[in-house]
Length: 186
Image (cartoon, rainbow, N blue to C red; front, side):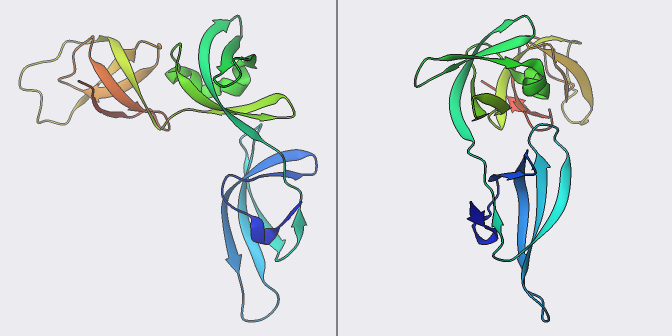
């Protein structure tokens, strides 16, 4: 149990049997009446975001979410197999939990897996990953200043937009949050 004064971004609350992560919070003290805390909560399982207001000092139930550093090993049917880097325990995570992050996952890649009561809730990848381009149209000499883009397929199978001068077999840095091209890697 915690009070609304203990709220912070990333804290996971147990409200009506569902897990909600605090995305944003603001403590408000109006000129008239009692103080309150305005929050934006994201459902850990469905991803739905809602606004909720708590009176100041009210007790809220926190969920014990364990975030562990893990390494992605391989696919096993519809499951993704991760290994805890400290205990070497392997855990199977369903396709639904991995979700869109599968576009950026390579074997032996590090990730943070959030686990609640033995159930994996979600995975967090680093903000940027380095991936090889397997296919894109050939670049043209002089196409460096126009700012145009073209589609490119990465080694994971994901498709992103890259500048026109990028060639196949080039290693690029990709933002895992929105899939944008960040630059070439030497």
